[in-house]
Image (tube, rainbow, N blue to C red; front, side, top):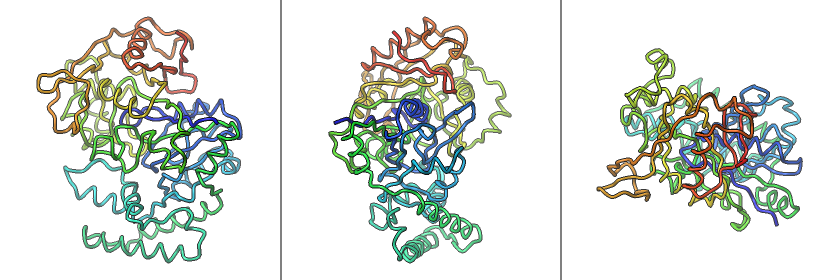
Amino acid sequence: MKKITPIIGLQWGDEGKGKDVALLANTLKENDVIVRFQGGNNAGHTIYKNRKCFVFHLIPSGAFGKAQLHMGGGMVIDPYSLKKESEMIPNFQDFTKKLSVSPHSVLVLPTHCLIDTVSEKNLGTKKIGSTGRGIGPSYTDFVWRKALRVGDIFYSDFKSKYEVLKEEHRKTLNKNFDYDLNTQEFKEKEDNFFEGIEFLKKTTVRNSSELIERALSEGREVVVEGAQGTLLDVRFGNYPFVTSSHTIAGGIPSALGIKPELIGGALGIFKAYVTKVGEGPFPTELGGKKSSVWCRDVKRDEENEKYPNPNPNSIDQFEQGIALRKMGSEFGATTGRLRRTGWLDIPLLKYAIKINGVDKLSLTKLDVLSGFNEIKVCIAYRINGKETEEIPFDLSREKIELVYKSFPIWKGRLSDYEKEVLPKEALEYVKWLEKTLGVPIIHIGTGPLEHHLVKRFW
């Protein structure tokens, strides 16, 4: 029996998983399946197709391939967002024929989004960096056994169940945050929600477990795509600065209702540097605390005005971080927020590889580093004078000194090199990463477009 291929982000999300899923989708057949297993429209997977940019928040990133697409039971789904996202895809009608949704997926209500936004704002400087898409409150209602799921929309009492949950949310908003739900803006959001429900009713609804086990038993390929990244896993990430679902490969069986032994070795995706959106610890962040506050409080236009041409080789690490963000276009695909930037962190990467059972790697955005005079990589932490690769229980409570290794940069743009050629310095760097991580790197991203990719040739 075939096994699932999980595609998992190994950092704080935004590693470029979408591009690898899209690449795999080009090799899959009509009866193969691509599954998204967790999260909601707090994710943002950027895909280039025929030089046009698409950002998928809910739909699996293999939308332009031939394979069947499935939104799994571990997801939380904003129905209106799904409708709008589906409609942006060329040949919309043909696309919807290959899309299915699990009846166990949780519905994101308009009041979930309000609770998320208002409660995050109320936290002030202690906020965790939520996207405001209602993800946390939706999962909370699910754990409290109050949630409405996709399967509920086909029953006659759906509207009355919706009203009961809405009333409970109204009381919470009023009592805890002095927020009045009776606004025209909310009425419009509610109308959109039920418009999305009508769209969902026309979509194929299938149990994740039945769909996947049948495909595997028939020898078909099943690719399972995660959202966010390992370090945002609700239990094994940098808690409490995490998302509300299990982002690791171990979360796939419970999200899809399948046997653990059906999970094969994971393809782990990581960037040649590290980025993070939102609050929380980030050991290798360029600019440290100054950067984290800046990315929290400043808009993209403000940064461009103050730093129109940041120098990646400035003696100021804060300016280096801004340059890296600009060169890599590191702005939230879902929120537009500035992504915090820093050097690659080997201890965190090894942790993510181990916890996911990764047996192959994809290195993305190596080309972005071309503007630097040298590449730096954190190879170990020094805690209380002791050098270690072990990750502390709580990164934010430890004073960590970083041990760095430097590498020479290559000449020219990597996207200008042929598919089976890399400059000597880049290839030596990739080989060092393979040896250090103990896992083969099968893809290297050399630019944003579909053809900007080098497959393993050494």
